Image (tube, rainbow, N blue to C red):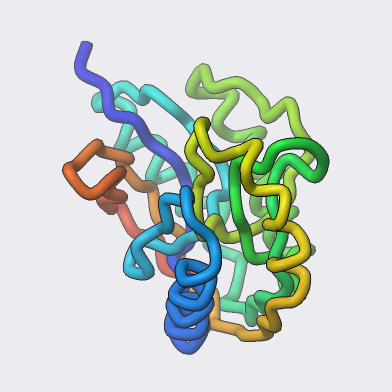
Length: 190
């Protein structure tokens, strides 16, 4: 059976994408040992699927469209920086969601429940909407004790309109993971 590594997400559009790119540039000058996300690949993950049978992609896309149909485009506020885990050695540097998290939470819950029908597990962790900016390499995690105060001192407040949900394939490439749209579902603009 042919499979693809997939997730359901939303791209980060203007003007937030440009502001996040500038933030990554500033952080890159101050922090070493972090693999920064290419600004063209910035997204918000709503549901990680993992290995997905290619024969199910059309049905999964249809189900995502059913869930998204009543949802109009909405403002997504992005602000504040942090890292996961919240304590201990950092692994992920992220930008937080300041507005729109209620809608994202409902979308996540509906997508999570719907994907059970396709054999995907429900999320064990609570949904924490964020935009991943970078990943800390294993060898650098203990050396980045200074990361939290640097992130806290960084000012970030931006926004974009979230107007589509994408079923992505996560494919390895030379520059890291490539996020290839499998299907794009426009939110209801009526």
